[in-house]
Amino acid sequence: AGGPILKVLFISAVGYMAASDRVGLLKPSQLSSFSKMTTIIFLPPFLFIKLSNNVDMGRVFEWWTIPCFVALNILFGILFGRALIHFWGHRMGGNKGVVLASCAIGNVGQLPLALAAAACNDGLPKFDKRDGDCDEDAIAMVCF
Image 1 (cartoon, rainbow, N blue to C red):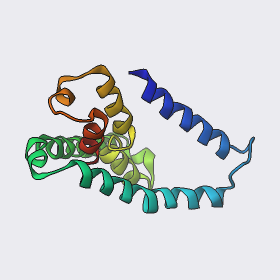
Image 2 (cartoon, helix red, strand yellow):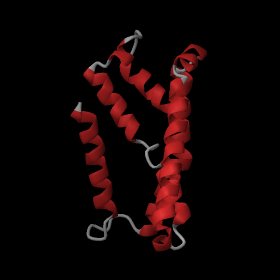
Image 3 (cartoon, rainbow, N blue to C red):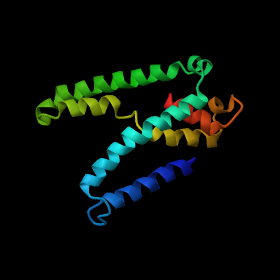
């Protein structure tokens, strides 16, 4: 189960070293361009390919709980962010919106992709129900 997480940590460490001032492989302007290119150009086609190959209406009805849990996650994040702003807002200055947005969508990132692979390797029952490739099912579930 630790293999996919170690891969993510290794890639993150290599990216951190490439972006650090000590190594100096990437300049700040290159980092900004690379970040935009990744989120605007590469991520949408990846999600579309995974969804189009693995999601049909039967699975949408089967996975109805996923959007509900995402909505609950965002709702509780907003409530937590509002509480932080209420109690410590005077110390935040103009960063209240950033704090609220970070609390609301902070856990909705790329980490579930690594955890999906770990779930397949552990043989969790949710992914063993269907015939086929567990990794494809798990990634499609995360992309949905």
